[in-house]
Image (tube, rainbow, N blue to C red; front, side):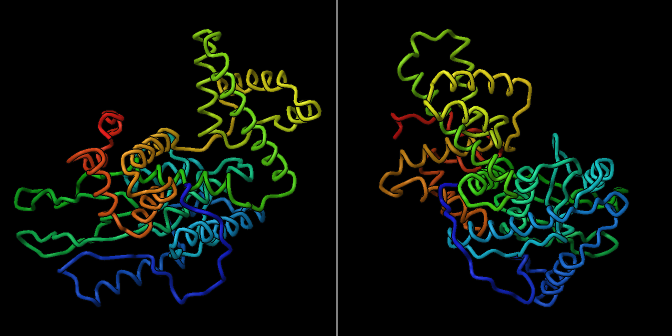
Length: 396
């Protein structure tokens, strides 16, 4: 996000990572809370996950290096925002898992979602990535995204499972980043049912938006260490991506009245892809080689046509959670417009979301949301509603 800049962090070692920020409970003693924390630390260190053993695929030597690079980049990004990273990400925490075993793990853990290709398990203290052939950039993107989740604010709470015939306390996730779990206990042994924990999760989209946007900003704006050929391709892609955005903007400013409805839709669509989605543009080097000697705008027009077709065919590698990141950009833009006295630039607004996600400082964010979008807007946002729909300059 615009709230982070690359810093070179000092190398430091801690005895054990503080993987839990808080355990909310009056039922548990300090010793019991410490035991829970120690058990999670044991899981983090051992990475002994029985459910995936039969389908785990060993990381390549290059992927091991990329995991270390992800750790360096995350530490730099968080430190620039004044946040101390909780966990040093190592390759042992990253598990490539065969698709069938990955899907079976999702079912066993009751994890639902469309097209999940990677996840952070706070229960097992690990990162799982569905196995496929990944390029360096795609693999780094997956690891950074999930490792940021691992470094986000985490709190647990105790839930009373006492029934008519026995007593007991369950411990459940309360917060993970911006995600908030509203846990209830259902069932009764007296009625012939086993007590189970249920409840809704709030701010799922916002949490993924913050993590996703931070991941994109790290990859696009930090000095990431890739192999020479991939680094060259990525730099050329970024250069062409910015040139095409400038060209599309100029066309709209100078020739919008001459464009057909179809041309407008295609240009708007490609502008969005280039600005928010595209990770790596195929053939970028070839287009730059043709364009740079004379800066021929005809080459850029050819590139626009080419990438419009590539996007239609699904041939452009892209960053995930694009709708959520677009929503976050609009949210941040509206906050800045209506709170000019509180925030002087977009970086300060971005830091509000980052601090909430990684330090648990939700109240300052909630106050700003409520004052900007109205009473009850923070809960509506948590329920997945686009609260920017009703925002206008007249309300400012």
